[in-house]
Length: 418
Image 1 (cartoon, rainbow, N blue to C red):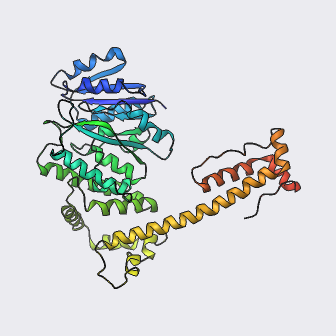
Image 2 (cartoon, helix red, strand yellow; image 1 turned 120 degrees about the vertical axis):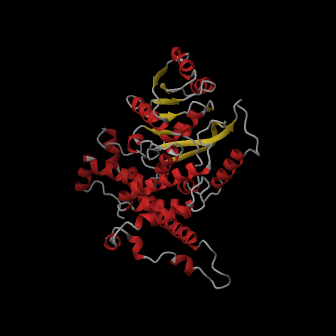
Image 3 (cartoon, rainbow, N blue to C red; image 1 turned 90 degrees about the vertical axis):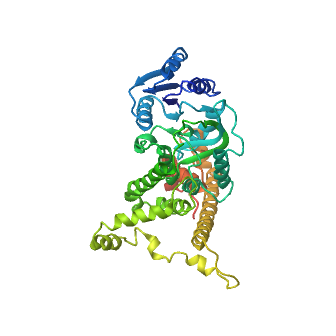
């Protein structure tokens, strides 16, 4: 698994040396390090070039903005690297960052993006004091993740707890499908939300990134520009996800958790304003368009329409006290517990079937003979994470084995009955 680190550089001559040193000092070193100076007006480009003899690739360009520079860097790194990590030129890594984050991708093919915990630093590499406003915000946001019932998609709906594009390590295939948008503040939040909504985000909670807080941080602005961009980001998410939401029940389930959690968003989304903006869009639609859109929701594709929402929450009401607010969240939790119960039952059934099949293979003299002469095929694998996946893999191997199929036709080996 080849790894590239890409660094967009802009007016950070004071910090870029520390950033590059942290990359080159990794216990699991990267295979490529690429910097593009985005039209800096200070000595950033010159500082970057002092690292060229250590294998750092350095380019300069006229100013295009962070999102465009990152997208260009990703295109370059994707030519020969499987995984790409982003580092902004004022941040730096802990030495074990890649050694501890890359296994999340190596061991889980469904994972696409990995991030870690982080430490907030000042200009002089010192941790911010606990009473610093950004430090208080970060502790509050990460306290949400301490709740065992908070999954990454709900957590991301509540806040951009990953904080920065410096905290992104991802497979190269994920980037072109979700390129960074021309935002000033939130290109990382949009990108990370896409990963969380697809169930492809993994979090290593150990602090392995040092995020620098200083006067020239992009985030240091009056509320209005940031809040406007957050509104735009959420509108973009709704629009971009709409075709997939209509076809993917699992994505919809994560989307519901994401949007429910967003009502308590800690990153600055004002959900009241957001709903008002949505209302404004609807005023431009003719009545028949609204009616057609609702009538087109087919119950086969939208099984949610076959069950009254919050039914479980109402059915658990015992009359002893008022039904608590947030009953919808309670209903979702009850539904999730039912799904866990059903999954456990399915897994237990698959475990029993897997055990019977393995036992029949171990006890069969025909299978033993086939293994001795090298004709039984690979029947000892354990591929798959769940019992159902392992059972499917073993059953497929049995079906592919000509030796076993011949023996079954002759009555010399029979698979167990269900």
